[in-house]
Amino acid sequence: MDLESSTIYRALQAGASTVNQPQRYINASGKYIHTINTTIPVKDADGKLLAVIEVANDVTQLSELCDRLGPSAKSGGDAGDIQKTEAQTLSLFRSDRA
Image (cartoon, rainbow, N blue to C red; front, side, top):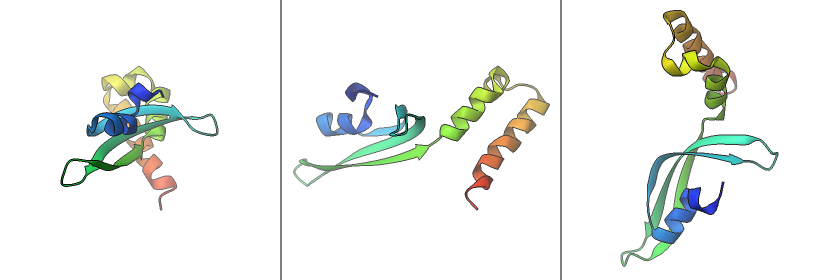
């Protein structure tokens, strides 16, 4: 990621909010991480920027699942493909979050 694509940088420089912006970056372990970010500047009563708040939802596993399933997952596929996709997606959310 570079400064131009950083939602935090954009909020700091222009005071602009960003909602549900997909971002991809490399973490300290060298792995690509996919997130959906909402970034909001916090200003005082005079409009002076005090801080920036960002909420990032990690969608890496979902993105990897779509990549593994290939074009049928992205185009809708047939009913069997859709059921398989739903089951795999649900298993992502059940596995380590119980």
